[in-house]
Image (tube, rainbow, N blue to C red; front, side, top):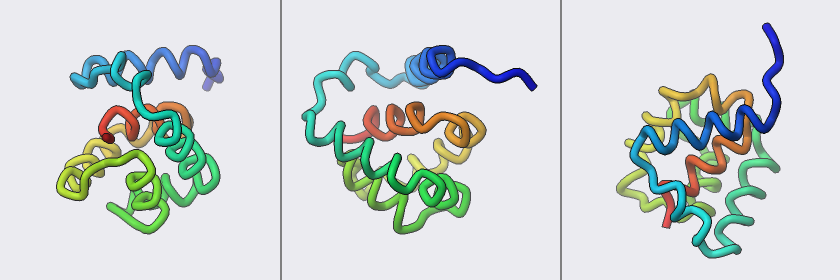
Length: 105
């Protein structure tokens, strides 16, 4: 299987978010501490976050959702969305970070 460039994966993630109805432009206006916190939470525990998505939840995913500001009442649906797109998130931490930020506060 050919390897995809990071730029292509990033562009694909943005396109998927746009197709899913996310306001991609609004993500750029998020509080910088929220953006940084989400990135740190995902990248520092990436394997555990992906495993938690696959399992339907867990402490690493909860920490990432907290950092992104995803309201507790929206998390079950968010986990289902993440599970449906898991092949993308297994290969692209950036796509996962964008998905979390797009659905956070």
